Image 1: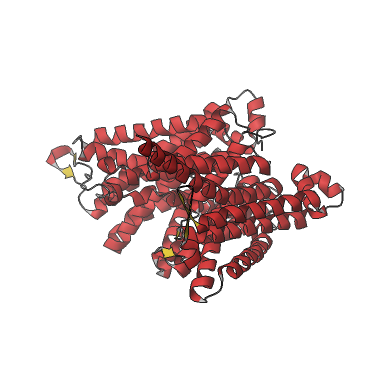
Image 2: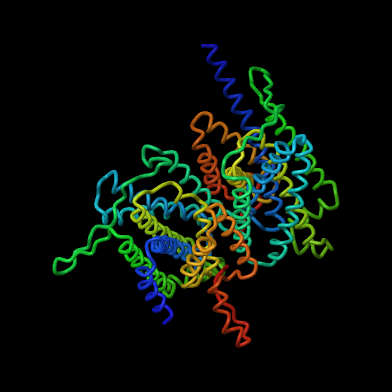
Length: 320
Length: 298
């Protein structure tokens, strides 16, 4: 019920609010996908990755390179870019996921830093600090009776991305409630115990990490296509930290957490009209307050209300 | 022929010298990280940013208030210690029984806050921490040695010797070691573990302060200057083996040399990539590091 209302609001509101807010909503939608991706590996599987900005960057750059330099069409480029991101995620995951705790985080952070260095340094390929121009928007989709669904306006781009948000949200929902998802959650509670039940935790974590990389790759492709220009700024590791902040504030390991967290943390700086510099400070302070006082996030806290009213000791799930 | 060989050796010597002084900064950061990781179980991702804050503090004390460098060094280190106490009291003391993942996130949040503070108060543009005497260059055996590089090396030696004496020869040092080895056991012996944790965190931030003050005059200051050294210092801990300050010191030293040689002979842009490559190989083939006792398990 609440979901239907949110979806209706997401569809109805943008045409009413004008261009600037729609472009904000597009960014929020892109980062919501990133947050879904983070939720899969961190919220449900319990592995904190600080390297997800790199996957977004790899998806975005792969897509831009394939379309701009190889002149291949939108959809083949779309699928090959996310497949490539998934492959990179898989290959990085093999050594990284053997590690636990701070070492996994360290390797993912290092991976993000290296990708950032390569994107800035390999000027012939990536255009260095200038980035790449002329990334295509999605091609028109032919409808019956000669009509065409075109994607050149801001609003149509918003709906295009919203479609993916909904699709990915449904995918995550199905996944989490499947047997595979249950295994992920079991790992987040106690990896050793899960392993003792005969579950190969490494391959499960690898699956979760690869899927998560693919989702981040989709966010990257959508961002590149929307923005037309792609610059190294998006793959900066700090963006990966921002996503973790969005997720924790929203509520890690909950379905609505990514949406709420991204919406709140991306709206607050806009409402307060802060200069970009203060954004990092604001995100950091908000994240710190949440991890100290509401580590389960907004949704996690919300979910405990009925339990607290019933004076039960039941608390919400999620590793954070 | 002979002359070009001579130049090649000088070049190598120069890179080695740079590597050693760079390694010294990593040693200071890595030993602080090891201490905090060992006792509080917090991987302090903000260690590099604490070092950045210290460098800026020194910059303002020396460049704006005309303080002497040595006085600023002492004051900045002291200030970072106080800052460490504040952070410990506000954040990590409250989180002493929180799940591990929350500690990682808190350290990351601290990093974001410090970077935000630096961007807001110090600005994003680079600053040059210029001290006349530290720019002086000594020529020795064909090597051009900037005085500041010598100050870094000597300063690190002094600090590390003092730290070693403190840990091995004083009662508080013994309590630190005991807490790192077995937290509950230390509690049973009557050691006030929270106080020891605060002590470890303060020493960690203090070491970051010294490192920042030592490196400040040798590099350009910018709010993100702490990220690279943090990653190298963390890699050094992994490389040297968890839980041993000796291991992380050796790891930091080796990685400093690797970084300097890679940036000298290959490309400065990709030097971090080499450091990480080595760390990842180490993790894959010998996860406990050079001197580690066991693999870290949650």
